[in-house]
Image (cartoon, rainbow, N blue to C red; front, side):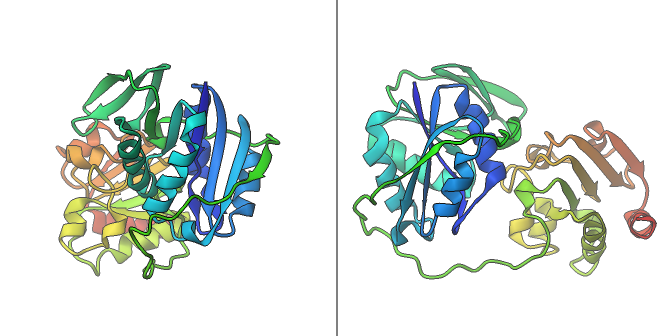
Length: 308
């Protein structure tokens, strides 16, 4: 059985972590062809070809794909779909934008946020903020699947797949790129960082969030926030971790002043080691934490930063 995996490409660079984890899931279903679609994506295609388990890489280098517009990329995938039983991508902002359009054009269902491959037609995905696992079986001839990458280990390098340049499909012209407003940061990207330090409502203000950032900088970590902190204006929206934010699974997650509502836990409970700092010893976050410190964050965080 053949799998077409849409690579996560940022500009001309391959998002190696997300793509490699989605590849691990795809390999369980058959021979994997990776599609890189962007402007100047030759380097991304070469990087994808080095991943273990990739049979072939298709490189669609065209300005129509350069800004990640969903409509032209969806049309490209549909034009290639005849050769594949599975069409897959990581469940990122880009993947969640493109795959539903592909499914609609193919008149099939989309199976989202898959965390387990049971068989060729049966998959597992979390529901109810991760409190239950739903098993989905599909009779669709073509299966469109997004992969929650926190549930899979990244595929290693060591492959040597062939790279084939393909022509662009016709652009439907349904949308156009105007501009990107991206916040510049020297910190790691939140969804792929090995260490994440997150602050919650307990931090108290936007000014106090500097304590979280200073600790993160000492650890060379990404900065996250709970929805309560974002809604209160303490942190920008793109730092939000949780059911309605980003899903992360770093090696170390430090939750500071976060009570641990189930919506937040859904976005970080797969972290390898969870450390919680909260002055409320009854806070739900301590139920999932590997290490818990019952203390005032305004004492504990500066002390920890100083010690580091």
